[in-house]
Image 1 (cartoon, rainbow, N blue to C red):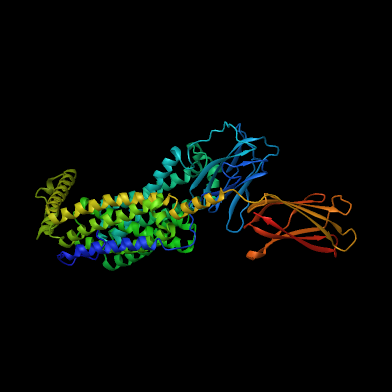
Image 2: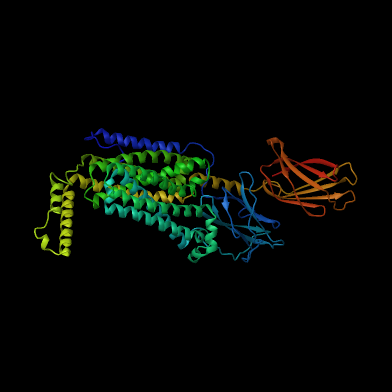
Length: 640
């Protein structure tokens, strides 16, 4: 419906030009601000690197395979599988180890020892922080490439029939939310008489039923959607319990609880409120319903914000309330538009005042949508290349274009709104005449059976409604408004579908960063294993010996550290304490402490030692041979 101020008379020709100029300025502002620089923003996680790299050929079998991601992920026992050329598991089938450190998200799985030469396949599947499943696969070779019998499913995570049904439920959930919230707001703010109109009651109740059913379907399908892809697993109690322990599962359960409160709100709105005749009592009840309904609506909107794009990346504490405001504005505009369409086509009683009030509501909603949309676009896109070269950016362009079309159609609706009067619904004396027709006693009412009297009353009601509909349909202003609002609703349906697609699409900024990260990660790594030998003397009895250090693969990222201590006689030597620290003095990085674990006599080891940057690193080793005898030695080594 109209997204401008209520019509105040005939529009001169300059008003369409001014409206077009305003729209062009708004679009320019959106695309200008979304390209402003910002820190990295995340949504769907993406694989940014691996060790070994995709397609790499290594001389010796690695001890583990590590994968790096653009954001935090949730993993399970089989999230990372390594398959040998025959298709058998080459990893130890343990849960992936979290090797993340600082801003780097990395997971690894240990491999069996003595793996033969050939091509190995790494298949991975996880859930990104914004609740969407991700998956992929790559290969590396030991010794030399070989033929492999591994055949992985081409179905992406979250795909297949389960994915189709889950996506349908997602679309239905957004649609139900829009009808529930927008329809209720339309009744409370624009047309209070609509609380007694059966078509309006049906619209809001159907919105509640749709959102509730869609939420239940999503909760049941969440386990197979992110895992096996089999419908039968929807009723796996263990799987359902695991879903409830996740952020998306908690959001869906919270939504169901809030929908229970929404059911009570609907009962009061179309029950007690609709029957209230005292103006002051109805005003007080309107305020209470507006406050309570607003809290419930914001809570339901927050179940999306807390589990999807807004909850990850930069400024999440700002992005989530902005997302809630955006969803509420969408519901008020598009849900109110659907309510107005139902009122114009299904009820003869809506007056011009209600239509004008919705015009003001629509205008306020568009202002909120513009402000929140600009922020969201800036956060999720960030560059012209991401805007035009990624699916998210292209969908965003389509969304902005659809909003432009919707505003253009709304301008025509505004013109019809300005011409609309209430005389078409009830011409002079029409309401009084209709009332007289409905209440005039039947001349033979005393002689007519109750069944016959009820039948005559129904016939008179139908006749009166038919007359009202005929008068209403004959009104050219009302007919023109219905046609323009119908066109708005058609565009709004497409707009809502595109908006829902955006919530499940990897944002352009993340996609570009992941692509750049993957390119950098697959570049040949410099350096090689670091081997150091460092003599020490703590000054006490049996305080002399040699420290030998192996750091493998000796490059940036995750490394395995082995430390051996030999006594002065060349035999393995145990000491009470051994500590290491790594410092890159040229970049003021460190010291980074490493405390290895004793593996055997004279042998200590540490896995996942992170080297954040290549350079000339100083390795400090502290050896304590008694309660009072201790020494720290150091040596530099080129790493990476």
